[in-house]
Length: 214
Length: 94
Image 1 (spheres, rainbow over the protein chains, first blue to last red):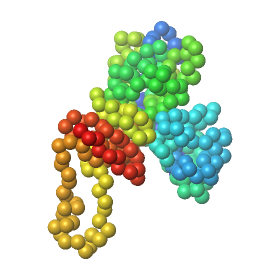
Image 2 (cartoon, one colour):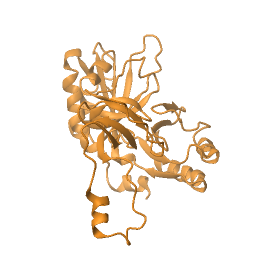
Image 3 (cartoon, one colour):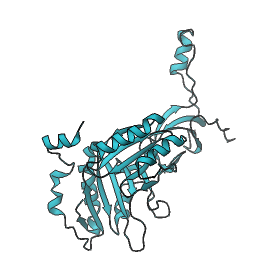
Image 4 (cartoon, rainbow over the protein chains, first blue to last red):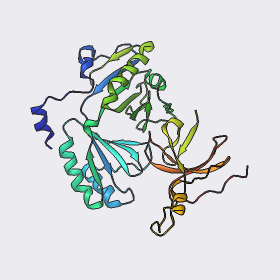
């Protein structure tokens, strides 16, 4: 289906539009310990295939700027234009800019189908909440059983887990540069996004919460 | 919180997992030939030991993969977790 055509016909509603986050967004970092933002409508493609098949891995790399899917569990690659997250031993998530899904799905499918790979557009299933700032880990620790300490969860790590009982794909997107605060992207099913946002907003109150532009 | 070692993801909290019952069950290849009693035994009857137990587990809130585990039904201790297709580990002595 042509998502652009649909978007023209029916205005798209973000999962958190009813919270009026744009009006609360400061855009500047301020002194808050926790910064929250929603990145709406990111393109997300579920990719499956055999990591032992060099043809499949090469086909993915030919579309994704030369980067192969990671075979090390719970790690991601950032190619500049795409994030490629490990989800399982034969499953990955490709995250790209809003609007890229239709063309990317077509190109990836054409590349991996001869090698038995499949591509599924799952963009609309999840929205992305960004938790960053000096206290980002403290807030997530209130609801997530993962060990997010830098020693256990390095820059570029990703994992599927629960935050306040909501299933999320969690991706650490900061580069661990000195002085750079932690930044996590939480891809959560959109029907849970309202609850998850309110949980994070509430859990962050003791550190101060700033809403950022997505 | 009990930590369970997913063969792919490593140690994770128990609330990410679901137990899928007894492991290493083999599907009947001659289901049309066996008697109803034998089929019922295959379909319904499971081990219920007080001690070590071979089980299937699913990392349902993680990588969503099935794997096998050896768990003690009294202490909940996990002796081993291993990928499907890998051989059954020996049971510990205790």
